[in-house]
Image (tube, rainbow over all chains, first blue to last red):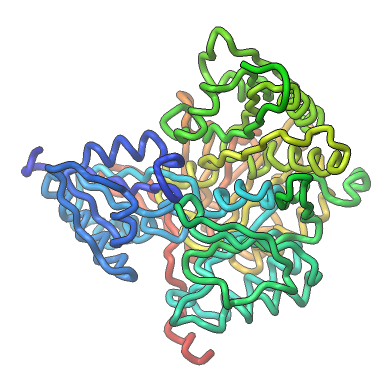
Length: 265
Length: 265
């Protein structure tokens, strides 16, 4: 390991859960790293690390600080990995790292650091896979967290997505500090979509305590939802059925009503 | 290999490009399969297959037929994999398979077939990773193909996404049979977004002939785009810069203007 000159930094998506969904590129960067940087639970998700590897745990919501720390480490010659759950570009660390790079562009502080973003399986597609294919048609991914953006922007986006009949994948639906936002979002969606619309409630996908169940928009309640829940709200065409073995399936067909009329365009 | 009783079927996402982004679960199912089923180019993407493995190549747009064929094979006791590029639940085969299962639910035709959807890295997050973090905020994934849905539905969704300041990831932007739709979509977006908005044009991500470049909404042209292109159109907050080494970066910050005012809610 060199401690002089310029090193490299990878922002790695672990995928959801265990190594079954972790890409070879992610595994390779983790194995080669001298230093792992991340929010504590994501570092624990990595699993056993090498004896020669350093691990730097940061609290949540310190994205900019974590990014600058990792870039500094890499600039000192280390081989650094920032770990994210899922995909690092979806409501995760990649954006903060590139933004820090932008701030210091021209200063030379991190010039020569080789930065790579390593994509991963994101929570929405993993949750969808467990229940069938609810994301089979056009969809929106929305984070319900209003820590970094105004709630009115979130409302506007939910309204737009609901009006235009998108499937919605809702990340970060609820936390102790944001207790009412989810119900408000569901109410907004309910103004444009039937109470029978299938909703997939996926907890801890890919973990030992995973649970995925199908409800309806009329049934869903904040009581069973937390930060590790991913919600998928179907569109007007999303279907639900139970097979002969009692397993629930949800899918959104790729075809859409009136497709035969598109020749009029 | 058993040829009596009930087998199993996996709808596997290969991820984009080569094995670097293929999950261990996908690799394991591919290795165990007796039969691989898929659109020709996706079967070629799998790479070398085992001497004892059968390969069944289907033309594009025959999703229902391909799904029923694979389910029948599995019902005969085979270990079947349907291959999709990217994630099988995003504009790919998972939806068609679950829909076929739904049609025959109750008939017993495919009862007992064990069906698994194996998620993968989807094209949007892979393309995003190559250029930074353009998907760092709320986003919509939209297929511009009007083969299975009316163009007016696509227009409505693009208008909604543009109005509510979502980042847009556009799949299937253009084909020989759909020459004008992309320009119409870009014009619609341009009614709500500045000509300077960064647009990422990603071709064949993860393949040897990969190319990813940054343009603006005002610059982008249908001339350089085909079915293997993934387009990411930034939101009003998406940033572009070129670093000291001449590399272009695009990112969408997770924070949004006026976030400090959200306490008023």
